[in-house]
Image 1 (cartoon, one colour):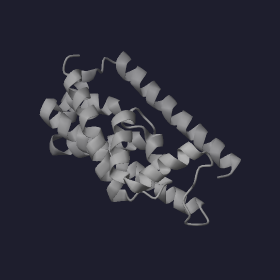
Image 2 (spheres, one colour):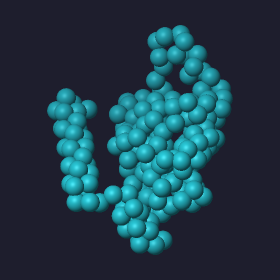
Image 3 (cartoon, helix red, strand yellow):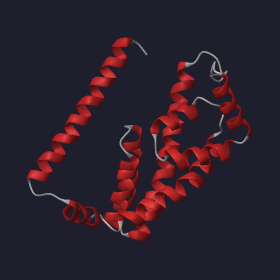
Image 4 (tube, one colour):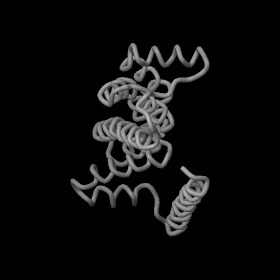
Length: 186
């Protein structure tokens, strides 16, 4: 990507963030709070869940904190449905982020050879990823949760989409469950 393209991309992201913050401040000043948002979302009926999943996936692509969406799911949809939507949304969001990053990297590369680090300890970690992809992705997700850069880093490896999705599903279960349970006490 050219320097001008990077600059425009960063300016666009900054503008979007500024618009979101402005909308949040204006909504708060107008008296819009959590219960009001909950009522409006639930008034959508069956469309509330797909809309939530779409917004959570878009948030992951925009590098918004994924665990905020997990808490929102718990608060809006309750503990059981909230966990199901948060967990499903988390796996869906990181998988789509992985696929998008893989497509962008494939378009940017002139060869199909994966990136190899120069440092020996990073090469070993990458070899472990190639030898045990599901286990390694699960451990990384257990520690780094919904971190978008992790999806981008994994997209530069030879990990298959299926292995990434399964590893993410295994690794995200405990953190999402913990956040849903703990957010019930807030």
